[in-house]
Length: 89
Image (cartoon, rainbow, N blue to C red; front, side):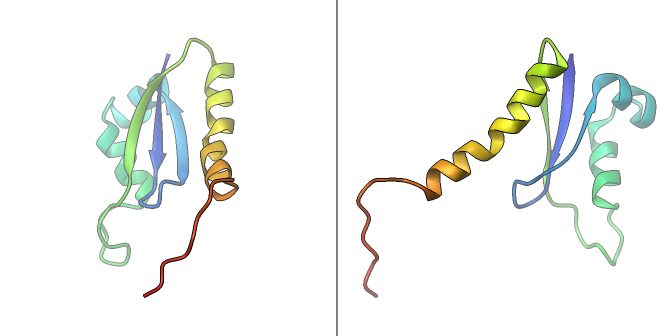
C-alpha cells in the first residue's frame, strides 16, 4: 500500500495517510493534502514549506518500523566517534 508522508521545511514528520484516505479526503491529490496540513497559503501562515513523500510498504508494520528508524540517523550523527576539530575563524 502507498503512504503519503508530510515533512515540514525542517524535515520533521507531520502527518501520514494512506492512499485510501488520500483518495477519499483529497480526491487523490497530494498537493491538496499538503495545503491542508500546512494550513493553506493564508497571509498569516505565509508560503507552504515542506514536502509530501510517497512510500510503499507491504504492511503497516513495515511503515511503523521505518518511522521509528527516522531518528536513527540524527542520533548517529551527533554521537559520532570520528576525530573532529573546530574551525578557527
